[in-house]
Length: 106
Length: 113
Image 1 (cartoon, rainbow over the protein chains, first blue to last red):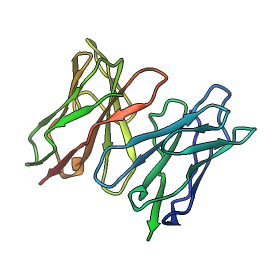
Image 2: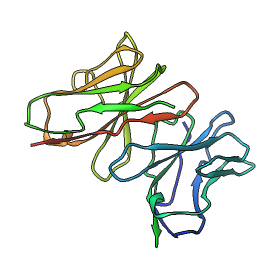
Image 3: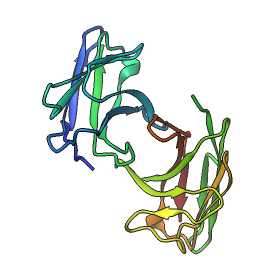
Image 4: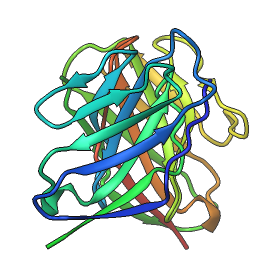
């Protein structure tokens, strides 16, 4: 399973785009990248996933580099409710790393 | 999508006792999982709950300590046996289908005194 690396924490101003990076340099060709988030005291929530094409849904956009060694989750207009820990996971989506704690600042 | 419910939502237990946590899914799913999240930490997979057969445990977790049942496609239980304060954690159930996203329950917050 590919190991992922994320910054420990990030801040973002409310209303601005939040760009959360993830490094997965050991990812193999058939491994998907999944993103989940966990708001305090709740279970994790699925956000988006992708293989090699960029993906967009109602919550976020996922940009995957051409070599697939890294990706960026984009929350286009961050709100205070987006304050959470964001997890980037490869392949089996069962092995959570330490994630990025995103704080959206008013 | 799937809605996952867990019971109890929280409990305070005495050392040496056991607690069984229930997980119910509102639709038939192929895969169910149990995670532990210790205070301030990320999620750690305990085991995959297999319908009608023994669960598949991750390294560091054993059946005697964390027996798991899954009698049908929508229900599973996790028992935390012979508890010690180190077992104080949030226990989370998740469910999904192969190749698709997981859906998580709200978690069970366990405190062992």
